[in-house]
Image (cartoon, rainbow, N blue to C red):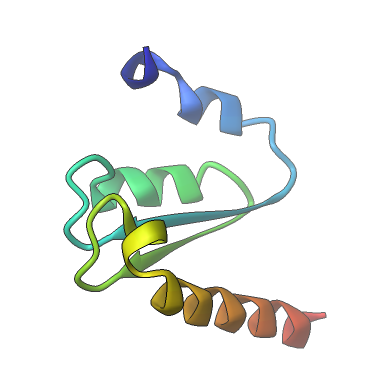
Length: 79
């Protein structure tokens, strides 16, 4: 059962970058939960796509690519 999957507990031991992507109309991933997931790891962050629902990857692909490129450029600048 996906809803019962304890993802927050599993993230506690992760030593990697985490990017949580959600739409601002996402009924399955509320903003507070996305933030909780992102803060469960040291290097986590949330991207919220305006106008998108849960299928943001499919419905807002170009907008997502722009955001991902911006994240990548920021990581390059940080070294």
